Image (cartoon, chains in turn cyan, brown, green, red):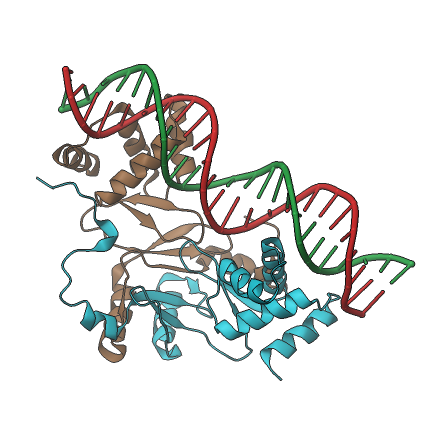
Length: 158
Length: 158
DNA sequence: TTAGTTGCAAACGCTTTGCACCCAG
DNA sequence: CTGGGTGCAAAGCGTTTGCAACTAA
């Protein structure tokens, strides 16, 4: 059973309806494979159904999240969603340079998680943990870079 | 030299002015000890100077951030700032239950950072790293909770 | 049928910007 | 005096909501 089918049955069970809009939204989230934003979902769905409303996208995302069928991912600022596939541990590394997403084996986080629990008493929610940075490829590409595009301000520092 | 004095001298050096508004904004950020939002800064400054404008607060925060005198903390949604005191580098843990932010000493992340670099080749941007989860207090409070925290409408029972 | 769902438009909260006046340097 | 800074108002932008029409079950 695909994640999509599971979601559809779950929708029914909770007394919600299967509308074409929801099917399309689901398909897009599924295709994108994670880390989709409402705007992207909206864009993609609109390709096949131009009358889709952004409000519908938001309402659907909220509904699916409430039913724990998708998760909202903690990416600074913009909200992102991904499908909750049972038994899958989602740890991702997102390269800020090329935008690609890479899998992060759970063991790395397990260490941090245990340490925080034991020594600080904080229980991290690592289920959908995402860390940003530079992937190996972009690191070598950017080696020569001197300036940081992010904080170029044009004032000279005396 | 206090962090405030350092900031003031840095402001001068970079050709910016010392205005009463900036002094007040700085004082508030300093007093709050970190993790302040623009709204809170606005509120606090308004207590002593009712004519302060929210736009001024935003502009000042952006300026200070651009000069690397304060840091923006990566909290889901709301922007928070804290003073950059040299040698007090740390990361943050945000409790999803009570919403409080806690400081996380660098050593915990350094391990993960090194491991990722060495074994995966990924260079995490940990400068403004934030991890979410449950703080120790909320963990004990929530121990016997039956419902899923994800769709909790109410607020933290103190 | 009928309650959940949609599209539309307007409202929302936070943030940014254009502008004329003001003031720190 | 001069250019950066301010207050004000208005505009963005992403998100939410009220409502009448629509439709899946």
